[in-house]
Length: 232
Image (tube, rainbow, N blue to C red):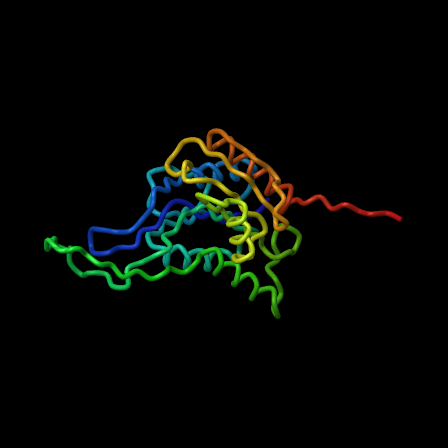
């Protein structure tokens, strides 16, 4: 059994007390992966943005709102986990200044100054690298190896190229590629790529079924990888 950390859903970056930046992530894929992992006998920790979906009762759920809160929760939980499946769609931008009161209409255009938020997966990967460079790595259920990281990449064009750029930049072990049609939908279509750009699986259908297929690939590649012994 592994302890798996899953991020799920969107985050919100508030402009004022009532308005915020967000996206259409529903949390359905995160919930489906959490359910599949629990059914497979794993211990599951979910860091979830605001969603309407339900997570399995056996999972420990940590609710967050902003990207900063999601990052803080992941950095706190990840060292005690065997791996991360980063399904969430955190906001990439936040307002430089948050208005203390509701922004009123003035009849003039409203100009927003935005700054990039921290990259949750990249920061967690940096934490992993720091833990394995100069200090003993976490003794995971995966046989003492450093925790693995699987990220999702939602792309609108040049999907493979952009996904591989993300995999390298964020130091992931695998990356799951999907498109905008997956947002807030019951069905999805994904491809799973490894560090060499090889397609390990292509799955389509309901998110519950696709989640099981994704977890099967993760199990084969990262949790219980097959070691080939070459004999002379």
